[in-house]
Image (tube, rainbow, N blue to C red; front, side):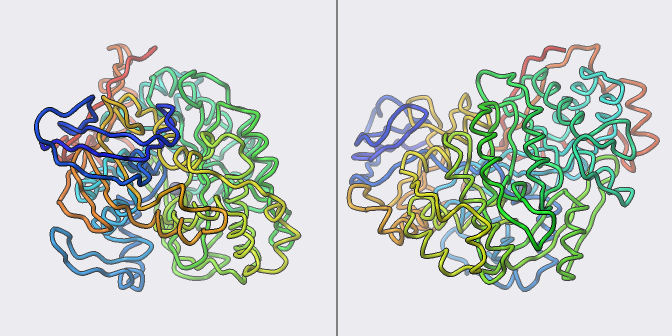
Length: 566
Ligand SMILES: [Zn+2]
């Protein structure tokens, strides 16, 4: 593999404590090294902003529901078409692009690692197949356990170790990375046409509450020493007044891990709503952000909404049904036997719509009111709040009060009475943005040990060089330059190779998928457990022996083995 020497890079690398130093970076064998030996390819960065490769800790880019979003919206597929160019395949799709479309556009933004936010274990094979064709990024799959009958039964019996054993078997079988809970209990209830409205309400099919499922999964997660924490989509997404549920959930989270958070709560914008209905709908970002400020064991991501067309897609089947009843537009609904569900609805967030305007404000407020940027990461829950190509605009909004005010003047005029945004003066700086788009993600996901998220020797050479000279731009006033600068890297380097140059992919690239294999003692190897085997034989449409995803479905992959306390 060729060697590269980056000269005169203006580096911000929060994990290594570097905040704006001009330095050289040596790359060899796909890694950052102390020095290169022979005659390396030299790239003069000319003082441009150089960051570790971007990491999206919650996005939807691969698998069955993403694919369903594609063929459900031919109008979306017609948008965003690009022709074949060099090694680049034809792409199409705006909010739900083709796999290559996702990969090229993320790479143009400097992103090198993506976490698919929600994968039903039974359908994981499809996700892995699509990862393979998302070649310019490494990937991880969050595996849905919210309605997993095996795990729920174990939790019902109060047997956390058995729940952990089932999680371990499943993650290993489907080559997953982390535990995802989507509307825990509610999605399971939706299989019977029901939902839950409170974290302390018993779910209809098991003697459990959502709070008990969340707490049980958190303890199981820590018994398995998984790199990431439990990744939670709280109950009652999108419902006026749901902030009490969110705060109640955060209140249940213990502080169990000194290396990372104990709970990652995703797209919290959708969970910070006040009011008793749509008529008095308002922002409750302040109490939610305060709760995060007081609880270092919690990391959230924004789930920012941006105006325009997009597609919502989630395992939260009952929520999508409620959205369908509001919009009466296209709607897809899916139940995944014994595991979870999903729904898909195209939406158009409009500036003249009061509810949409308030949602837009709430996401920004969370990022500005959470004091520690390591605790609030930048996402749109792509494509739910907006397609990820909006990230540069979001960065500019966070760095410029003037830009926020200009946008605020364009949205629904009643928004001002319902949100605190106009009163917030904070403007994030370059370092904050580096934390919220890569360093924070790497730490929250627990992948710094794999060389992700920093730029010191030993790290993977995943690097984004932006055409931004920080001393020549006043982000507060020149927000257009921020948008332009983050929209297209000069160079995106992935595992030591330049994969994108000024927005175009220049090589085919190669994905690596990270997955976990907890080392479980024989007594907890659920593979031969008669009760678990019977659950499969009686209830699944798939034989237990056919369930695991064979390694040939993964292109390159890296297995993370963990010691367990079982
Ligand atoms: Zn999501």
